[in-house]
Length: 227
Image (tube, rainbow, N blue to C red; front, side, top):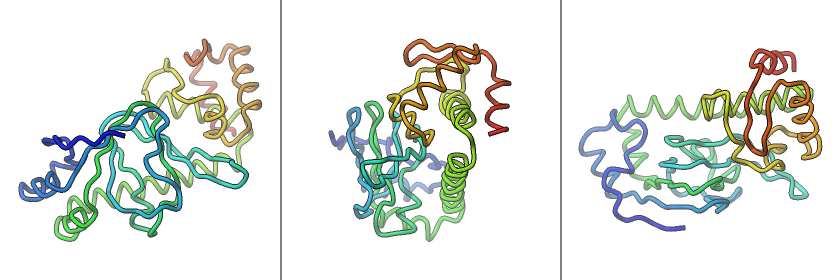
């Protein structure tokens, strides 16, 4: 973990265009960028919330820790995503953990400064409320998918998530291990690998190590819809 004191304008939030000049200056005076290496933990579940955080660069794994060292990956945060807002404004402690999937930069903003701006800047606050609501709905839908869909539907959801949400391409590389992909799908590593191999055998996808090419997006979407 490396702290960058020379932040210039890099800690302006994704909605910086809604901030006034004095608000921008105050954020810059009370912010730091912290660089995290691959797999380094950014915050732990059940630790106290202390700062507003958003992703400047890299990919971040958001995951819930359960009993017996079992995990559920809730989402992957990308640049300009905030981290932990649901916890920060809903509890005194983080309700999940976050770690870097690759070398990443996180901007930390003093929470008192951020809250002061929320109280006086309605447009900025409206956008933050939208983020919190969308994060909650996304996690709700992910958990519903894991609870109600059969395995092929859940694996299709994972493929669609990387293709349409994260990489916006029919060709991409999984940035997670097979075990982590299974945690994202809510299944075992063995079941995930077996189902992925079946998709490859049926020529729905091509699979070369971590590289995925979707041959039939229509079948993937049908599997997702049918569950």
